Structure formats: C-alpha cells, structure tokens
Length: 450
Ligand SMILES: [Ca+2]
Image (cartoon, rainbow, N blue to C red; front, side, top):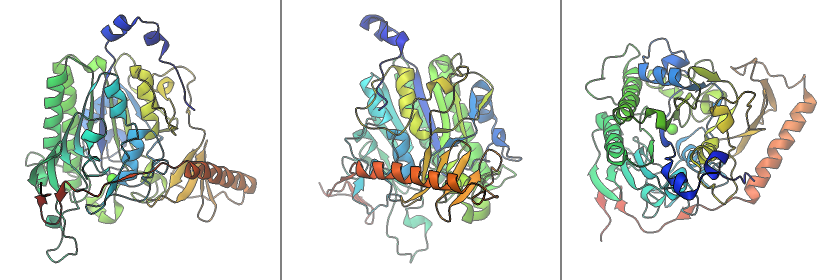
C-alpha cells in the first residue's frame, strides 16, 4: 500500500539537478499534553500565543487533526513511523524508567527517512520511545539528541520522599548523561537553544528538527522570564514560553533566510490532563482529555506553515492525523517511503491547498491508552464501542447526543469495520525491541558500570 514514485517535479530532474535543488527543511514542534483549546488561535480567551497565531496566519490551521493515542509513548511512535501504535507494538501505554523495551530499530522513522535523503536530523526535548542502549534517538535516525528520555514526572524529586517511585530523570546528550534531575524550569529553554544551535550549524544543508517539548506535562515549570506572567496561571506561563520558543525557532529560520524553505508543523501528543484541574489545559468545546478516547483526548491543535506552498491564513477542516506526516513529508521532500505497511496517508494535496482536496483517511481507529480498540470515525460519524454510542461529530463536536437508536445499521457497519481493521493490524503486528543491557540506573542515579 502507499507505493508511490517521487513527486513528478523532482523525478524529472537529473540526479545532479535534483541534488542541486534543496528539498525543504522540516521542523516539527510536538508539545506534551496541550489541549485543543490552549492557544489563542484555537479560541483560548486568556493564554496569549502571538507566535503560534502568526504561524497560523502564515499557514494552515487544522481543526480535525488527530493523534493515534491519548497518551505519550504510543502517540510518539505513531508520529515518527506513520503507523498505528499497535502495528509497531507500542500500543501498551507509556514507557516507564524500569522498562526494557522501546520502538524497534527496524522501524523507519521520519528521521531515518530524511537522513537517507541527505538531511541533518536532530531531536531536542522528550523522547519517550525507549532509553536502553540501541533505543535512543541516535539509534532511530537522529544525528543528535539533547533532552530527557522519558516524562518529567518520572522522577523522585517530584514525588513525596517516601513514594514507591525510586527513579530519577537525566538530561542527555546523545547517549551521555549530562546531569541528573535537570532544573525543570529550564527544560523548554534548553530544548529550544539546542535546536537553534543545530539549525545554525546545519543551515547550509537540509535539516529535520524535531522538538518534542516536555511541557506542559505535569509537573509544570516555566523559566523566570515567564513564571507568574499569564492570567491563566502557571499553565498559561508554560504555554506562553512554548509560544516564545516557536517564535525563537522562526526567528532563527528568518536570520538564515530559510522561512520559505521550511515546512514548520506545530502539534501536541495528546489532549489536556484534566484531573490536574488548573494545572491541566482545556480541550475547548471537546469532551474529555488525556487518556480518554473522547475527542478531547485525541483531537489536538495543529498548525502547518511553508510560505509559498502551504496557503496562508487558511483553515483545513478535513480529518488529518499525525500518521499522515511521514507519507506527506515523503512526498514534499522527494524521499523514499519505508518499505513497510503504513497506516498514514499522503495528505500533501490538502496541505498544499489543492482545490477539491479531501481527507485521505477513510476511517480512523481510536485505541485506549492501553491499546484496546475503542472506536472508529468515518466521515462525520464516530462510534464509541463501549455501549455502541454513535455521535455525528460535524454537528455534535462535544459528543452529547447519542444517535445509536436512529441509525442501528450504521452502528453495526461501523463496529464491523473497526473490528476488521483492528484484526488486520493485530495479525501483522510488528515487535518492539527488548534490550537487557542498561545505559544508566535510574534508581541509583548513575551510569551503568562500564
Ligand atoms: Ca503526553
């Protein structure tokens, strides 16, 4: 499936001309647990996100953009591989410090794909796809990694002293531990600065910069410059610092005259963590949040800009998912698609604003945080398998009115379609990679003995 030749324009060029024509840089900023409603351009009344709003004016805002899981690790696996988490075995919730597995290195990530196309590739922020030797970003196509291997709450510092959670979080540079328990007020700033240094160093070649920020995952921290500044409280401070980070990345591209040569994508890995009340975000009009399969758990804000290519100041209301990014980027960069079954689809026509372009996703499956099939969306309809609840999302964005009794045949049909596709994925499920050796001991706060 998805076999496709290089885009015509690139394919027609001679090898010399093709290499002379530089493909676009790709920047993906992927925040952690940010809600659908947590940007001013997505309707938040008090959080001020001028840089993201400017990005939306320079490009396209997606209002029906989905992640493939309501929690971190599976969602990240889907973004980077273009597959449902279950297809790559990463569907069973998030990776904890004591876990011995991660995304299999046989999988082809966006970084692998672009590296093969001659890109410099860097990951700056939170990884969370495995942290044993052979499972880190530098094993998955990234030339450079600066950041943390898992979530910022997987740390004894942020738990009660007697808590049964004896782990610590390191800040890493590639495979090396730079320090234990980095000052979390500086996580957003450090990831941004590392990304900027990388762009400065690689401005003369195509680059892929992936910035999966740790924030606004609980516990929230903002640097001194932002702490206490937003009327929305600490959560607002954190989002506004992320917004400034996007501004700094765009300014760096401008400084090198690369804005028009860069596809810039902003989105988040899952919905807001609602039980934390004012320290969690908001999904706006959507029901539910992180960990749930209501729209608030999996429909997230997304903005894409590439001046001169992605139409400016537009809104795309079609269904697009993080799994579509890999095949879409393959088209836009003239990269070879991985020789594996993918679940994402090429959404380049939508992204480029081609007249009449529509969602390439016929149906979208929802999985619980633990990887169990939970629902399906097809066109305007969503079936929640638990209780066979049927919602017409286009007219009922908040999933309030169950239409199950009005359309019993549709309920049956959607259930059968969801179960059939899930069975196909399960039959072809690929393994994760287990690694016995450790790089560091998160309980003892030290590298593994040499
Ligand atoms: Ca998350």
